[in-house]
Amino acid sequence: MRKFLVVLDDSRECLNAMRFAAMRAAHTGGGVTVLSVIPPDEFNHWIGVAEVMREEARERIHAHYEVFAKWMRDKQHVEPELAIREGDPVAQIIEHVNSDPEIGVLVLGAGTEKKGPGPLITQLTKNSGSLPIPITIVPGDLSKEKLEEIT
Figure 1 (tube, one colour):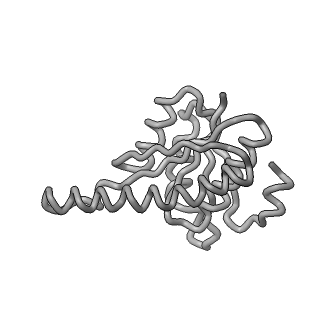
Figure 2 (tube, rainbow, N blue to C red):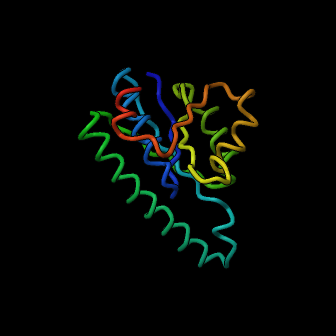
């Protein structure tokens, strides 16, 4: 089964990427993997404090994921899977893509700010020639109706 990999983060454009991935998976009989990466700089503290912070980050990710997962199950009839990694986000995305041969498309949401589409898109498009899958970039301000129309 081909899976769409979508990155879960705190950005507003993440919502459209999630919607797009779920809708495409529903229409093509595919699956969705939701990847969240915990950056290493969040844990530059004493070991005990770092462990507590790591666990709190995982709890936040699970809570955030469950909101999207419920929508995917209820509205798109897609059962997503969650993957959590720690480290540099771009490196972890690439490693995850390389570790799962069922992932067929990486879906990213583009920011609508004047400063650009966002750091993940900027960095990953530089490496796109060496990725084994295509990247789909979903505009962050695309309406729900337009997303339904194009998926």
